[in-house]
Amino acid sequence: MFNILHVAAHSIFIITLALLLSLLFNGLERKLIARMQARIGPPIIQPFLDIKKLFIKENIVPANSIKWLFNAMPLVALASALLLFLYMPFAGMPPLLQAHGDLILVLYLFIIPPLALAIGAFASASPYASIGAQREIVLMMSYEFVLSVVVIAFAWLLSFSHAGAYAFSFDTLTAYPIWNLVDGIGKLGVALLLVSALAVFPAKVAKLPADISEAKTEIAEGVLVEYSGRNLALLLMAQAVQALAFASLIVALFFPWNISAFLALPSIFALIADFIFFLVKTFAIMFASLILVSAATARLKVDQAARIYIYYVFLLALFGLAFIGLDRLLVM
Amino acid sequence: MGLDALKRSLWVFHINTGSCNGCDIEIIAALTPRYDAERFGVKLVGSPRHADVLLVTGPVTRKMKERLIRAYEQMPEPKIVVVVGNCGSTGGVFYESYNLEGPIDKIIPVDIYVPGCPPRPEAIIHGLAKAWEKLEGMKKCKQQNL
Ligand code: SF4
Image 1: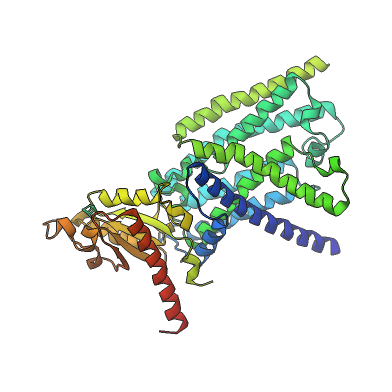
Image 2: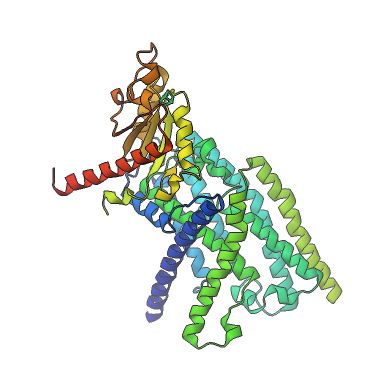
């Protein structure tokens, strides 16, 4: 009984923290993009103001939509995005529910928010929304390939080097950072995997150059077109949370180190140091693959984006896999 | 949480009801680095469902009347209508033209008029500031049960 209460309290803490952090990162992102365009930009707390405002607005449900589906999907999107943090290493701590889920579960959970968004859009009966939803699905099918190659590469490598360990658990991934398992050409392979995972980032969270599903000037915000008020707030939060979640997945896969291991700090300071180090890592990932990229690019067409992911990024990931394989051959 | 939640976060939907495009360009100019309306939380959105402010330009041609009403009705409450430009406020250079249904306040309730042909971007931002003031006023009325 006590254990259940403890887990519940802990997960509420993690979820609140994740929500606050992701909105903060979202504000930081808007500010930095504005600075890069020589603007002053909104205050960093702008996402909080926007969400607060959306909650007092009227919540319109279109007359010929499927109402329960339309209303349920924003909740599903936000809940599954937040759930991710219970199964992933977050803020330098091991995942809370790691006995119950692994990397594969996390990958599945990542699919739910975009899917929920697409279903909600189809349910709204707006032609703009269904165009957006179709684009969302096309894009999803093209980048999921890449992610699966990345995950397979990790599991394959771990199953060779540490045959006893369970290759898909975050425990194993944290205990044996992938860069230490390979050398020379294998490191190049891992770097290619990292680049291809970063290339997926904008599409995953619908930011430029891959904000095709909600192209504002083209299909009137696409999947979001009919959402207003509370539902829109939930969806915007889900998107922000997803961005933080994907950044922390990349951190967990490629940069699982904790700074306290190097510094030998007393326990409470070690927690704080790890937390700050985690923030720095996730922010660096977001900066490199989201903020810089979306400030510098324009929107792609959906067929261009699909082609880029299916051909080029996928090929890049395959090369990464091949290099890692070559490295194993050389070692053996 | 009252209406003042809108204060630093006004999302704007822009609709052109047959203007000469002069005012529309000035609205875009208000978002450029020189004026940067986003620093006040003003954002141009692509769907009336997301908007707090309907920014209307143009004198309302016959074809646009229905669409204007529809866009207005699609916006969630609380909402504010800001007219940008002389031709939307009075007919301006198109006054008494044969194919007009406007000006805009004949068709939907207007809260703020920004005069000028076209008005400067500063004037448009000033109009949005007036919109906040109006919302503040609504809040006070509510508190005093007026
Ligand atoms: S007010 Fe003047 S500049 Fe603006 S749309 Fe009308 S005619 Fe054009």
